[in-house]
Image (cartoon, rainbow, N blue to C red; front, side):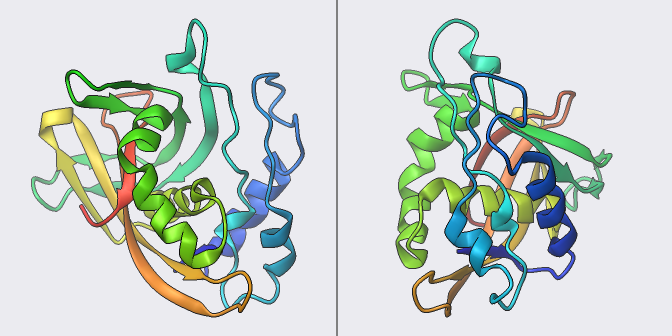
Length: 202
C-alpha cells in the first residue's frame, strides 16, 4: 500500500473514506468508487495512516464530453508559493478529469494522459506493494497536493507543480519497501484540474 509521509494524513484518510467510501456516493452514475478492502483493513496496522482509504479511480472515459468527466474529485490542495519565481496559488480542491491524450502533438492532461505516459511508471511502483497502479498514483496525488514539501511553477503550461513523498508498503509483508517522491501538476487558473502526476520531483 502507499501512504503519505505525514501524520496529518489521518484526517485526510478519514475524510475521504467518509465522503467517498461507498459506491455511488458521488451521485454520478458514471462513477463507481471501489475502495480497496485490503488497504482499509490494514490501516490500523500500518505505521502510517493510509491515504489509500481514498477510492480507486473507476470511470468510463469514453463518449461525448469525456474530457470533462470527473474521475476523482476533491483532492485537498495546499496554498503554495513557487520557489522558482514566487507565483502563489491559494489552497482549495483539485479534481482529476478524464482529460485527453494527443499522441501526434505529444501532449495531454488528466487520467488519459497519466495512463498513457506514466501508467508504466506507476505500475513499476505498484509491483512493489502488490496493488493496482491507480491506488499508488492516487495516494501519490493525495500526498503531493495535500502534504507538499516543494512547489514550483511551470510557465510553459501555466501550471503549478506540487511535490510530496509516499511510503510504499508491501501488502503481504507489511514492510516499507521504498519511499518515493511524487509530483502532481495542476492548472494555475481555475478550475485547477490535474494536468499530470508521476513519480519524481518538481
